[in-house]
Amino acid sequence: LDASERYYKVHGEPLFSSHMIDLSEEPIEENIEICVSYLERMAKMDMLLEMELGITGGEEDGVDNEDANPEDLYTKPEEVYQVYEALSAVPNGRFSIAAAFGNVHGVYAPGNVKLTPQILHNTQAYIKEQEKLDDEKPVYFVFHGGSGSSTEDIRYAIKAGTIKMNIDTDTQWAFWDGIRAYESCLLYTSPS
Image (cartoon, rainbow, N blue to C red):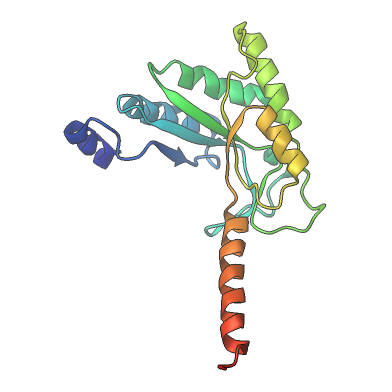
């Protein structure tokens, strides 16, 4: 953020359009407090904050949540509403929330993950009711741990207001598989 603020002073635009912060392992109050302080700075530069709430299962970048309490893999509408209230109070603040609905980082066998994107729909309805809003989708969601997800679950999450999806494992596999196929052609093609 320091670098972005310096860049903004010189160029009048942000260095990055958004930043993601994952404090999901911290108490929710601390997560929200830090995210509010960051969003206050970011809003002045028209940057979007992506905050993570709840635990994404599996393992990524050395963080292993494979043994996480299954209940922690599902964010409650009341928790998202806490975040929504706090971040919406930031003038000109733009944010998205990576809520947990059974998402898992990394590779997993089909059937080992119980995605429940209905949680996102329920959360939208809950916030709409609490705030007496006309907007059917007051929250922008992010789908973390989307690799290997079914087309049906992806579409249902999008209908619930998901604007971004992370597919790191699928992307790594596609890249690696392309290199593997290319190398295989080189190894087994004899010169004519």
